[in-house]
Amino acid sequence: MTIRRTLATAVAAAVTTPVLLLSAAPAFADAKPPAQTQQKPSIAELELAAAAAKVAYDDAVAAEDAALDALKALGADTHPLVVAHKAAKAAAADAATAKAAADQAVVDAHALLDGLPETATEAERTAAETALTEAEGAAVTAGEAKSAADVTYAEAGDAWSDARIAAARLIGEAQEVTRQALADLTAADEALARAKKEAEEDKEDEECESVPEARLTTVITGLPTTVVAGTKVDFNLRVTNGTDRTMDEVLPFAYVHATDGSGLDSIDDLVSVQWSSGSSGSSSTWKTVDNKHYMDAISPLKAGAHADVKMRLTVDASAPAGNGVTFVAGDYVNDDGTCGGNPDLEGYEFMIAAAGSKPGRTDDAKPGKTRPNTSDINTQTGTSVSPVSGTLAATGASSATSRLALASGAAVAVGAGAMFAVRRRRAGAHV
Image 1 (cartoon, rainbow, N blue to C red):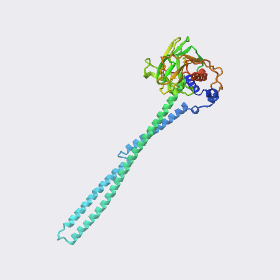
Image 2: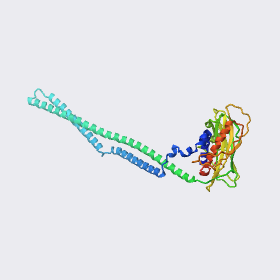
Image 3: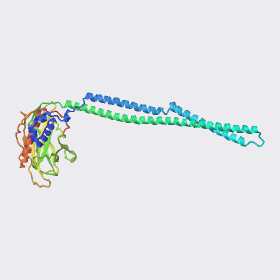
Image 4: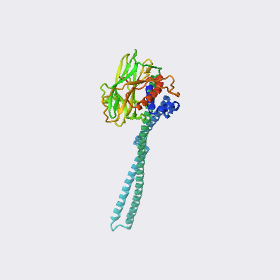
């Protein structure tokens, strides 16, 4: 829910840099983060992009089909390269036959000349020698014709082979273009689908006038006042609808903040709070609660009824001794468009003992309410933040804890300015 995201962010900013928060409110209001200046493409633009991607994909498929057809055509008997190759093959075969006949004629002419008897006349010997010379000349001519025919046949074969290789390469290139075009089309379609889904969700996220409801209470039990670094503690969050009407959707909120012993250095990265979505509280059901992950909605919560949420606080073994506070609150959204939340943010203060410490028996942390005074707070352009009434529970912690509490209280005041612009959120049922 927007209010809780805003509030959690404000808590984090205030407890780490309270002076900056209190003295430089206009800077926060006037300066837009770079991410906010970037406009998302509209659905119409995404539709155009998806249509263009579809055209590119169709063209790529058509080009791939044409390349496949071209390769197939190269295997047809009527293709010019195939016709030329077959003709060259036949001519080479004829030339080879003619060369063989010419060679045989030379052999026969030699045999005739060598077989003349000694009684052969000069005219007969001259005729035999002339026949041999003519046969040898015909053999040379036939050999040259065969060589030329062989070259033509080889060239025709190379031309046909090169054409098939080129066609196969074009198919590979066309398939790669098709794959990329399909990826682009898929991405464009997914972007369009996401945008349409977000637009549909935005229709559901109708703004409503938030009405503070103090009878929607959040109470923690079982959280000790001292938590040893390197341990986990389980506790319970009870959300109660103290009104006389059913709340269709209740959204519990939790946030943990911690500092070292000085109260000046945040150790938020060493502490975490989780909630369990399962009845058994097994490890597989524990979910982290932070600025991005919220507890599921309780849908519905009847008048006078309550719901319990199993919680777990974990402090890393490397955490130094220090102080912490766990904030809890609740918002509600009704199907009729009404919404709101508890104007008080419950803060349960605890001490962090160094790893290996033996704190012995400790009491449960008690709540201290910080009620923001929103009468003179302007979260967009305001220049001041009013003091926050109420204090966090006294637990015997160091003076640093009071500084943490004051800073957190200021953050609550800033966050509470958004209490009157709550947006509806669809969430899975918790109970």
